[in-house]
Structure formats: C-alpha cells, structure tokens
Amino acid sequence: MTDALLHVAGLTVRYGDRDVVRDVSFDVPAGPFGLGLIGESGAGKTTIARAVLGLVTPAAGTVTFDGASVPALRGDALKAFRRQVQIVAQDGSEALNPRMRVGASVGEGLAAHRIVDKRDRPDRVATLLEEVGLDPDLADRFPHQLSGGQRQRAVIARALAVEPKLLVLDEPTSALDVTVQARILELVERLRDERRLAYVLISHNLAVVDRLCEHSIVLADGQVVESGDTPTLLDTPQHPYTQRLRAAVPELPAA
Amino acid sequence: MIAVRALEVFFGDRRVAHVPTLDLAAGELVGLAGESGSGKSMTSMAILGLAPALGATVSGSVKLEERELLGLPEKELLDLRGRRIAMVMQSPRGSLNPTMRLGKLMERTLATHGIEKADARDRTAAALADVRLDEELLRRYPHQVSGGQAQRFAIALAVAMRAEVLLADEPTSALDVTVQAEVLDTLNRLRAEHGTAILLVSHDLAVLGRYADRLVVMRSGEVVEQGPTRDVLTAPSSDYTRELVAAVPVIGAARPKASA
Image 1 (cartoon, chains in turn yellow, brown):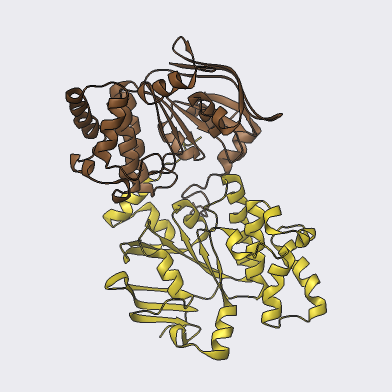
Image 2 (image 1 turned 135 degrees about the vertical axis):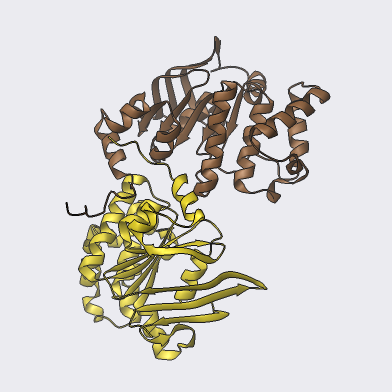
C-alpha cells in the first residue's frame, strides 16, 4: 500500500459484457501535483474519472482515496469524500444551476458541509470569487449573464469552496476560446501552488497536459499504453500509439 | 478563383463581418482564423451565399472568376454551390441526409448537377480513392460511419463534382487529433492534385499554421491582419494576433529549462 492520496490499481470497468477500462493503475500523491489522462474519444478517460469519483462500481481492481476504498464508502465517510474530491467539467454551465444566482451556487457547498456560519457565507463567497479572478459583484448574476470563461471560473470557485484535496478536471478548457483558455490555465497553475491541490486532468490537448501535469498516462481502448513523467513521455514517446498521437498534433512554427 | 471586395455582413444595423479584400487562388489554401464572435464563419457563409438565409444583409462583392455571386438568384446559387463551390461543415454528419445510404447520396448529388450515370460511377470510384475511402462505405448510412469518414466523404463529394473551390468551416473541430490529421491531409492533397482553392475556417492557429499558405485573422468582425502564414505567426503585425499566438499552448514551452 502506498501513501498516495489517490491509489488506483488494476481498475476494470465493465458496461454490459464490454470492458471499457481494463487493468488501469496509477497513483496521485498529495498536492501540489497533476496527473494527466491522455487519450482520444472512447479511450476510457471519463470512465476512469467516474470511477475515481465513486460514480461507477469497478468490475475489478481498487480505487483508494486517503487510505479508504472508494466503492465501499458509506454515510459520513462518503459525505466527507464528496467534499474532498471535486469535479470541474468541460461545460461550466452544467455545474451551475441556471435558476440560481452565481453566489448562491458557489456557496452551496459551504452550507451543505457546514464550512462557515451562515452570516459569514457572503464574505466567503466574495473571497472565493476574488481568488479565481472574478469581481465579487458577479455573485448577484445568473450563469447565462456570464461569459464562458467567467462561468468556468465560477465552477472552479464552487469546487474550491469545500476545500477539496483532489480535483478531477475533465476537459476544463475545451469549450473555451484560446485566449480565455490561456487565462484559465494560469489560474489552475496558481491555485495548485497556493492551495497545494492535486488533480487528475483529462484533456485531448497534449500541450495543456504538458503544462499542468508532472506525470501522465496514455490510454487507448481502455488500457494504459504508456505512462511516465510528462516531458519524457511527450518528447520521447515509446509506444507506437503515443508516437502517432504526438505526430498528429500540429504546432506553431518557431519564431 | 475567388475575389472578395468590401464585403459587409449586417444583422439589423450591427455589422458582424467586414472583409475589405480576400483572394483565393487555384491550388491555394487560405486560413481564416479567429475566436468566437470574430465573424469568420459569417464571412464564409456570405461567400457561399448562405448569409441572407440566416437573416443577414450582405453588401460588397464576391466573385467566382469573373462572375459576381452576391445577388444571384437562389436557383443559380444552388447550381454553383455543390458544382463549383463545395463545402465541408463542422458537424461531420450534419450535411448528410441521415435516411440515405452514402452511395445514394453521391448518386443524387451527381445526378442533380446533370452528370450521367456511367460518368457518375467513374467519378465516384475515383473520388473515393482520392480520399482513401473504401467503396464498401457507399452501402452505409451516415450514422454507420465515423466522424472522420463522414468528413472525408464530404470531401469526396467535392472531388466527384470537380468543385474548384472548397470552403471548410472548422471541419475537424469535432474530431480526435489523429483523425483530424487524416482529414486535413486529405484536404491538402486535394489542392495539390486537383488545384482546388480551399478556404479553411478554424479557431486553431496550429492547424492553420501547418496547412495554410496565407492567413487572414479576424476579430469582432474585422480583419486585423493577413499575410503569408509564417509571417503572420512568427512576426505578427497586430497586437491581437500576437496575443492569440501567445495563448496557444505549446508542448515543451512551460518546462523549466534544463540547467546548462
């Protein structure tokens, strides 16, 4: 047994009689740390994320968070787990209730997990919004009144509100324009150091993974084809699939 | 092949695209770059004559060789679109009738433009070979092919029609990166082998960097810069292009340099 924050060993997830994830193992140490899950559609990235979040039951293997088996969590332990592991998905608007003001959405977890007294919540929400680079006045707006980048920042603030140890970032910038993406990546980098966050980042963009993750695993058809520290993996890919993937990424001409 | 002059697209009194000049020569691949709301798609819609159907008012001039396209009756436009000007859209299956096998679709398209059956069969076989698709695909319905196959089929339609101009609007944005490379390589071959003039609309500067001869960069409806791709990307003249280029994540860029 390792002392990793998240320990995944031999994970297999089956839908019907098909293994969509087969024998996947990786560790995520306590933050600051980023693990990248690289792969194309159908590779099993999101299914692995769902298993990490305890949303699917593995057919085989283990998912251990902070020493406890995730599928076996019940009651208060499950509630604590749901606080410690937060997800930020591709489309920010899905995580924000469209009929709730942004501030209320961001502060929802504060109430559910009794993190601060009711009277202190507005202040805490304002602090969280500032932390992710949003004007605290946006708390009074509805999600549709925010830009895509602002919404994604609000989703991050909502995740941070409950002081998680691990974030699952599932294509967090894929729906954003490139200049907006750049600022969100900066934000994730800053938060990771300030909050000592660990995260699992799912991305089809190798350069995004390269920037945010020390270690990466490459998935194809539900299996790990290669893993290692990200710079080595991307500079000298060993598996033919990783090589093909790497070669397919167009790059800007050097200045 | 295509000459755009003083093109303006309005929704009500709001100008959503303004392109003073844009030229597209035979065998050339021009990239139209920009973020959401830049007007790049509306520009390509206007060139295709599709903008009025979306409720836009278009002024200026779009010429296909010597022929003015703006203001042409819908019937003539319909004939040109498909026969001389083809398009490939973002949604791979979006432009394919879901109730028709691909073979039937190809047959109908060619018949609509007056191509005889025997000729149509030859053209179909040659076009599929050009885009590296198996003829077996003709028996399938659109939902039975992958996104990359659907896009290559859309390109095959253009090849079979011997279209001189191809407008591709984010043709690979919905595809995985290895599939994206196959589709873009196919487009690239098309212009080399058939001299097709291609306008590639994309938000992805790296994609355009690899394939485009020239780049047109748009922002908030305006052209902020155009020129040879390499010049635009390595020595941008506008602040916005510089910001855009700097924002593209690059593998290896963020790494701490190994100590010398």
